[in-house]
Image 1 (cartoon, rainbow, N blue to C red):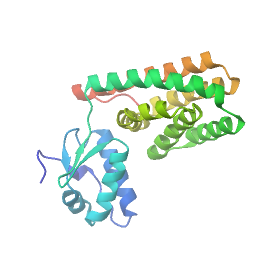
Image 2: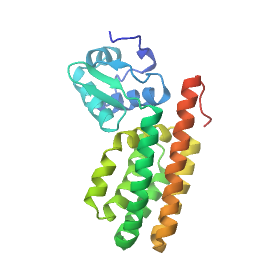
Image 3: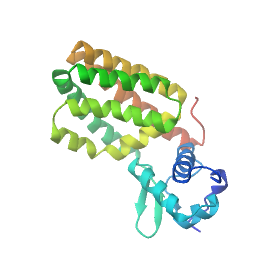
Length: 232
């Protein structure tokens, strides 16, 4: 048993379901909803026993959760549910705002019709998506296309330094329908600015998007500390 009591009874069994994907989705949902608390430790053996599966698909699920910044793998000890201090979140968003507003100004200069179409298709898919994992993937890809068209390898590398916080927060935001709607509207503003080749408008749209994201995450963190739940 891990340090501290974890109520894994809230993580449903995955019998008769595709294993690694279902384990990943069930654990992810439990983390985002707060059923598995930040700082808690999980082991492959513990989760496998609870979910009535072998350790192998659990290990694969752990790796995927780690790639999204939701857990941190501790060699030979399992994973720890990831958490970030208020200061870490604030600093990461300050860096993100500076870097992504620069990225979109550069992208406006470089993006072609193919790039505009890629963003349009991703945006359309994100409007229709209902699965939280798919929503996160599409939102991440929209930003990735913009960063790719910035054509600046150093900028892309620097954004990678705050990727854990960004991915973690995108996952949290995907579970709130109200925030999802606002994200779609904000992405639409960004798209229109890109299409119009308006660098000032694009920069402002990206800045508002990132600042709104930080405000939402701060509210979520405050709600968790108070033991309340943010409205859907």
